[in-house]
Length: 173
Image: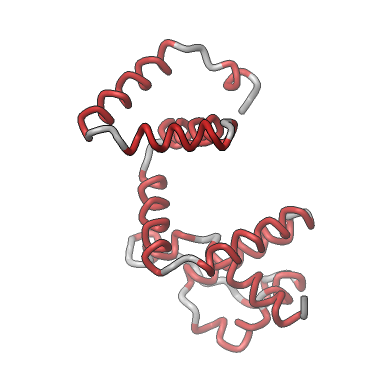
């Protein structure tokens, strides 16, 4: 991959890796401190070189977001970077409506309590551990339920989870 193309992919990944940018109007955005270009490491400056000329014109929250993203990128292994590039390529292929839904779901997730976020992560892991056939059956079953049946199923699962011990919590997960 050419250096320029790699830079574009990295920059786009960094922008996507910071979904909090969509809430630029909130109070945390107003109190964000600018990040001086000179305070970035040479590696970060290399990743973000396309912003160098107008870095001072970027909103402080955007500067902070790009800075955090570049720090994460630099800590990734080559395999993690490859995976991130693949996810970004997939993102680019999504329609604007699909991207909008994903952003909305991300904001919903971010608004959950830490316990509820962990529950979502746990459910995702359990879903991912299913075979493709099991996943498809589950999707089909869910789609055929009425809203009331879905609510009842959620409540039943919630009660079931509360009764079950969570051994993965003991292992520090």
